Amino acid sequence: AESLKSSLPILQRRDDSGRLSVCSKLCYAIGGAPYQITGSALGFFLQIYLLDVAQLDPFYASIILFVGRAWDAVTDPTVGFLVSRSRWTRCGRMMPWILISTPFAVLTYFLIWYVPPVEQWKVLWYLIFYCLFQSLQTCFHVPYSALTMFISMDQKERDSATAYRMTVEVLGTVVGTAIQGQIVGGAIAPCLPGDLDVLDNSNTTLLGSDVNISHISLDETKRAYLIASAVICVMYVLCAAVLFLGVREQEECGRLKTEPMSFFEGMRMVMGYGPYVKLVMGFLFTSLAFMLLEGNFALFISYTMGFRNDFQNILLVIMLSGTLSIPFWQWFLTRFGKKTAVYIGITWAVPFMILIVCIESSLIVAYVVSVAAGVSVAAAFLLPWSMLPDVVDDFKVKNPDSSGHEAIFYSFYVFFTKFASGISLGISTLSLDFAGFVTRGCSQPDAVNLTLKVLVSAAPVVLIFLGLLIFKTYPIDEERRQGNRKLLQEMRDSNQDSDTELGSVV
Image 1 (tube, rainbow, N blue to C red):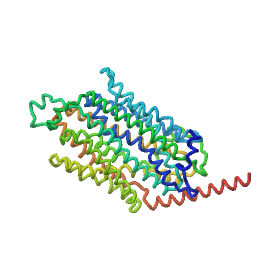
Image 2: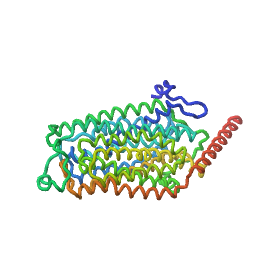
Image 3: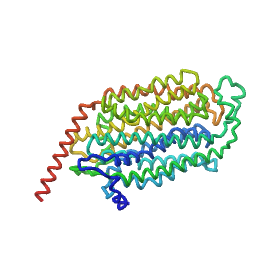
Image 4: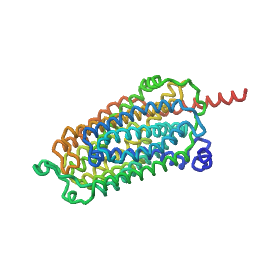
């Protein structure tokens, strides 16, 4: 693999000043697509798949979603710790993790979307393969996230590469939503009218008579999910190959060799650093808000608004809007600062979240809200990964004798975001279960519709404002960030001069 990689110097071009070529940035950015492609497919469709296709009880579906994400969250700091202790190889320190985990992650992802023939084993099947996939995805994503610190020592280049990455990642969510939505959307099995529809149509949301006359069988729907997952698996492998062949990992010049620390020492170091804790907790609340919206929007569109045959197109509009907004937010944070971008970008969607639950069901309004929500989704994607390197740099300035801990910082951030995702999925599915959700029903009780409105509007709005209150205390502003940049450059120059003098003496 190394000989193949070394034979492609054009993809890995970097000039002597440390600037990355556009091609290198694109190859790096493409490596982030698998996480978002699979994440958007799972986030938007797994809940509705478990309820309507696998036909699991909502309680068991909530157990699968919550345990899977909780397990995933636990593996993040563990993998981050193991990566931080990994030895440097000819391929780098992060790349071997990415390369080895890819084939196993692809296999387990495909099996998530297969309905086993034995009814009694369904819950265990989905729980095992969902947890396995999340663990293997962690072995890919944590090293990839930490790779940001090793593609260039220049802060501006890292910010630029991060903007490329976020654009491709949001595009990845578009691709994941489009593949899953369009393939599956053309093979939706008919809903099953129940007693609720017969006894009290006035108190439920009906989904249109065209659904009931559909001739699509449940087996065709299952087959469509498998086809979509196979296409996504192929894209996963291709993106991983581009990343491996197109990006050369750099070992930081002048890095001090420190003794490896234990897992708990690393955790204490990270969680005891104030700016990092404030950044992570702020984004924890805002991430939870958007995850609640993401996890329940398909059900809200299908049942509460009554657009069962349009939900996949509405989700696609959200992702397209987000993709087109990334360059704007990159310009905005460069021009006005990252904290200002947080306040404006995250709150942009709030009025539209309120609007969509306060008016009569309207397909036009649904699309307008989707476009507006996509703008905020772009900010929510870009800003955390643009601000994390600033915290790591700030830590290096305050702790010049400590090094090699980038993966721990990134893994704990991923841990908290995935923990938030597990909480959102578990709460959502349990809430729907308590409200009386009817699996594959043509209509839902009023309590379910009210619950969905809370999950896509009221709860996210409250969480967004809590997150922004925490951001008020985040101390790294533009002045401090630029000061850290100069200090780090002076430290690198000093270490390089020391190494040169030592080499001359030897």
